[in-house]
Image (cartoon, rainbow, N blue to C red; front, side, top):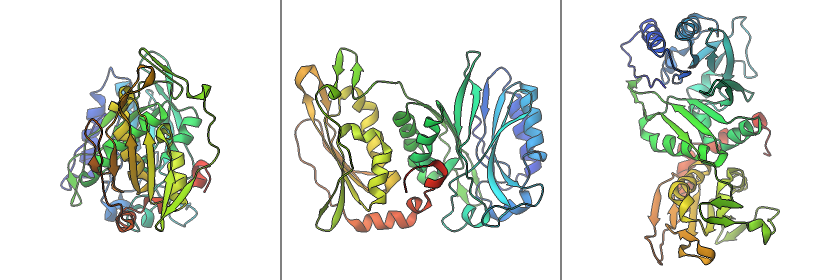
Length: 388
């Protein structure tokens, strides 16, 4: 990955030349990934119209040539795409945030138009059309073969439904170029990990560095790898659990009301299924409870990541009570019960051992977070064929 840094003092032409040289320097590698909107500027809204290009324009031509010279598959981040024939989208706009993937021979292998637009009434929603299609493409696997990759961009990361749909389409890798700002970079890191864990996929997430248009970028590009375990039914070293041998699964989500607060009910392994938590949020839940017997082996890497991801994605309180210590049949529960706020901040966490933790879960905090980052209102269920 090339985590590019740039500022307002560099011309687009100079930046394209610089990046093309960096790509050419990657000869010998299989895949090179660039960030989102690195040429026009991820937050340079006022210049997007003048810097828009087609998938066969100047930026694309330079990246095609660089990929061919280096002999690499190049995910060239994204461009502000304009149509070559003057056509517009359903909202009458003629711009899209479009990712370009070039094959080692320089040919354009795949394009993806960003489905979820970021900007809260400005930026992308005001200036750009939304993409309508899930896109997968074949990337080199490093062993002489290929692997199916799902393409998404930046703000898409907040929508787990999209990645489930890519998984159903055969994706084993998610490639995510971004221009994610520093002030929310903890969400960037955590949600990338969550997408890897819950989908048992590799996540390649390439962010932007530097400061442009008065916005400091977050950096922290990453490759998140999930080491697959089969749960629950589960096989771990010296441990084997077969919940399905004794228990029948539930058949529908349940919401309880307590003092006028709508509470979604889940249990333990449910935590790995973001669809359930999304259904609760859409149905009006502002708190979700997670009683659990999460094991130490998986808890160390997954428990906090997934709890915080569910809170961030659905902008709700997550109250998770886990067991701690020795369980029957030689298992050990991880503990670390916690209460997570709608921003994904752990408000309180239990230490090892038996104990009690308390926090005030107020709906006003939910309302403030949902107003600040209205991602629930930006869902596009029609684009990935899930219930509304």
